[in-house]
Amino acid sequence: MHTRSPRADQRPFDTSHFRQALGQFATGVTVITTRLADGSFRGLTASSFNSVSLDPPLVLWSLATTANSMPIFTGNSHYVINVLSADQAHLAKQFATRGIDPWQNTEYELSRTGQPILKGASAWFECHNRSRYPEGDHVIFVGEVELCEFSPSPPLIFHSGQFGSLG
Image 1 (cartoon, rainbow, N blue to C red):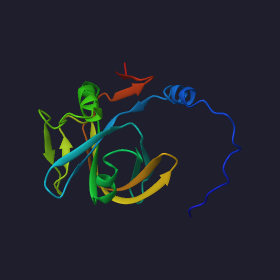
Image 2 (cartoon, rainbow, N blue to C red):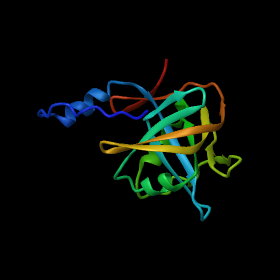
Image 3 (cartoon, rainbow, N blue to C red):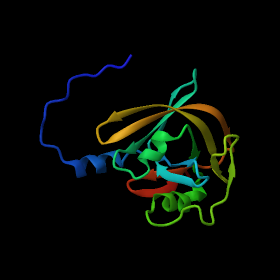
Image 4 (cartoon, one colour):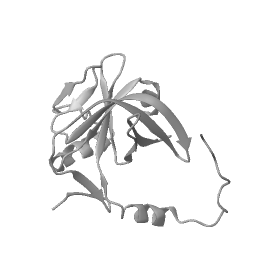
């Protein structure tokens, strides 16, 4: 069932204040990776990751509609969500920086479908690109998890615009 409620009343809204308020919610950090038809890899940093369902196994993440990688992730059948460990802040920064090749000096291995899995990630989820839902200035991607693995380790946390860890 897909329902849509009427929009809220239009009121003056301070987007900067809203962003600062959202920053008070500590999140984990992921790098979403995929392989293009020509064999090259793409990846991006995302903190908008969440579980949706255990049966079937579904997760979600979101991407800005203006992102250069939107056509790539919309068109590919599979991607991997890599949950970064506390010592991988450098990867989060690399994959969030435009104009550099984030794959240079990045260690990875390939999944069964040829998707890149970042070495040292505390968990990874290989997903079939099941569905997409445009909402506001983002698209919500729902992935059906086909395979996952984890290696218990302290997570990388993002809070108030800063990377950190638990403890």
